[in-house]
Length: 68
Image 1 (cartoon, rainbow, N blue to C red):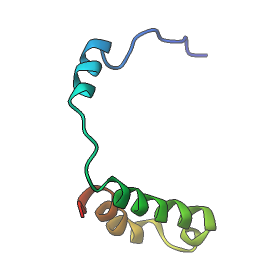
Image 2 (cartoon, one colour):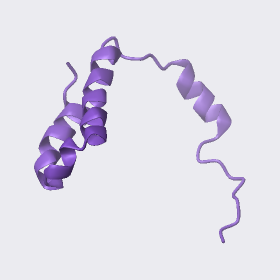
Image 3 (cartoon, rainbow, N blue to C red):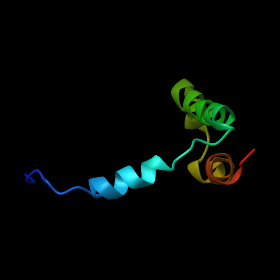
């Protein structure tokens, strides 16, 4: 059984400094809606009938590429 680690992935000072300047994008609601469509499709079972590889393009575009 692994031992709990007390090491942090990021130093607290570095993380706090990065978060000070962070602003959510203006279109955060639209981006959230795109993710919710994927969640709903997953929860409804719609994605069960589709091969994973055929979803790669749409998923990558919706989540990582489209900024609109």
